[in-house]
Length: 458
Image: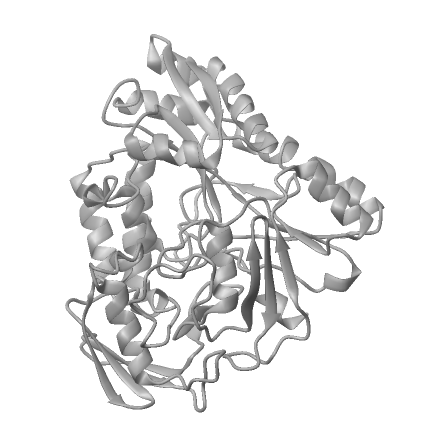
């Protein structure tokens, strides 16, 4: 992996690596289908939504246990969900469960979740890990020692390395192999470890120009379309991007197809909107236009701004390519590479004009509330661009409260149209999930949203 996770505690984990490792250790009532991202039963045997949508009743699978051997019951589910919502626990995922009003234990295997309002994403939200009732409110445990019900347990964690051992109890059959996850920050070092056989797999950590040489050396390179969105966030409440015309000009100056072809090796799809073509709510349409001449003419005067990006070589190359293209459209961008922590700090404080980012798990369109709703300005959410659009707010609220999927698809199509018309955020492309493997891990492939549960099946 490219970096160390901040924490392995599922109540507090937010970074992509930590989230993926935590889901190898812990299990939720539901999990995400590896291809579609749709919620499917995991610890639950079944989930029954009431006719009025006011509650969901979960029936647990029989004979479930945590890694310690302690039985997993409806009481553990109830206490975990209430702990995630408890302000004194201060879980970073409390907002996900905001629609839950109460939790009732019907019997040892049955739990009923009562909702305060109709909420379309309840089943997806309840992929959050279930903890033992007596541990649900413990202080933060960054090293992953909390009892889990996933296929692995954390047998060792030190700086740069996490060892996961097969769990004898859990929601999946016991894996055959121990897995060691290493943080190797340099891309060349990751490639050399793969070539030497010191590592068996790297997911998303090798840039496209290196893939063909690795393949010629006998390593397996495999990619699949994903739900991950690469986008540009703009500070829209102040100059220079408080004007619709400036945001639209920047968008029209970016040749998405060229960047996909030459910098991403064709292993991505240029964006037509926020949601990937494989997503159930995708609104079909052409790739966003590339027209620097019209962009320059519409601006009238040149725009000057800074463009933040990650410090990874590929991200810097992409940002510089965008800056070069933007010049033709009348926008001068100064590229500022930053390590992830510094980048997120500046975005949270609003100290930026524009930044390239990735939304790795855009499985549920309702996730966009956190990034675009006017109630989600930092620190309450991740609306870092400070977008405040009543029409967009209303659509996001409507999508959150509408259960019928066909109706939700229509709502999100209107949402996409509003975002495109006003360029509140600039979708760029959907990068493939790419994995390089040696012979021992030849069958490993991340799911569409990038998770690593298939490590348990090797």
